[in-house]
Length: 181
Image (cartoon, rainbow, N blue to C red):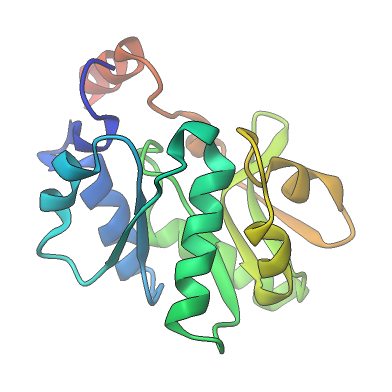
């Protein structure tokens, strides 16, 4: 991207701030923001938000290292948390309303995993009950929790959220988004 993706502006706010504000507005508590590369540049953008910021020194490993870091931080914060929401900052459609849909689906179905569904698969954001914390804490590799979200249909409820398929991975993605906003 040429600069830290988390600091790209959308509607005048950095992506990382938009995602953290959505999590807070959606009732997530505590909100843990996991930073990897360029953490020193990104951290100041979050200074005014009531979030826990943790650095993932193993960020070159991939998404799993960030999930492990976040889950470890949540478990240290409180041993009584009943669920974790895994969300990404590069999905412009992520919002408090998305969180509400995931929570409602979990309450309705009682399933231990509720995941957004787009592009013919389950993905982030995803809500996982605490029974999955040990598995999340043991993840390795770039795929993150993809296998967990897509490998146990009897435990996973999918919420159709096609707008979340649009993420920002390239400068062209960002330019296209800015052309429509």
